[in-house]
Amino acid sequence: MKGGFQMSYEATEYNEAISDLFIAIFLLSLLVLALAGYIFNALIYYKASEKNGFSDLAYIAWIPIVNIYSLFLLTASGDDDKAIRAAALKPTLIFTGLILFLFLIPLIGLITLPIMFCLWIYYSYRLMYRWSGDTGKAVLYTVLSVITGGLFHAIYGLMHMNQPFKA
Image 1 (cartoon, helix red, strand yellow):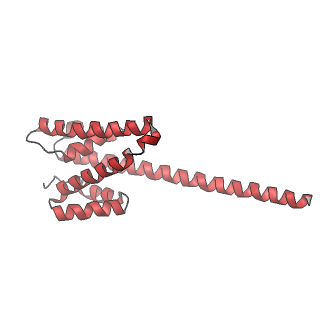
Image 2 (cartoon, rainbow, N blue to C red; image 1 turned 180 degrees about the vertical axis):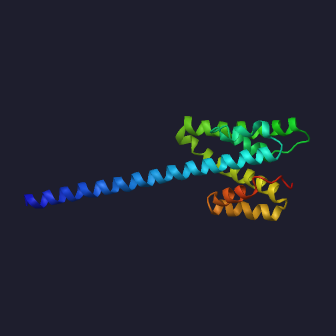
Image 3 (spheres, rainbow, N blue to C red; image 1 turned 135 degrees about the vertical axis):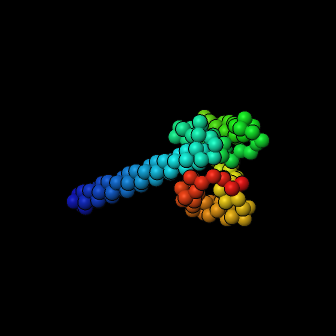
């Protein structure tokens, strides 16, 4: 009986090591994908900012958390440059507040995740509309972005980041 217990203990140890290895590989893969997504989005917002008249603020696309201002700046509307920048600041502050709320009060802050997701969908639509100039295409591209987890957003953005907005 003692030998059977020893085999079971070794098998359990081996299974734990294998599961730890798979978890480590999964987390490392997730980290690499998140880093790649960050780099692609920063590149897209940087190039689009340069091409569409915000070259003085294009560098913001590379600064974590602050880079959300680039998305809001690219999708803001206004009569002049000052009005556009002011219009972009409001959603940036709201989004930053939601992020802080999420991290400062995690359990209650989970309510902010769907709100942030809805904001991302809305501003993704606005960006797609600015690139395509067509409401129908913008809706389709936004739906494809949601279905693919942002992959379509990145691919379409990489293809159009050096083009001026149509709308």
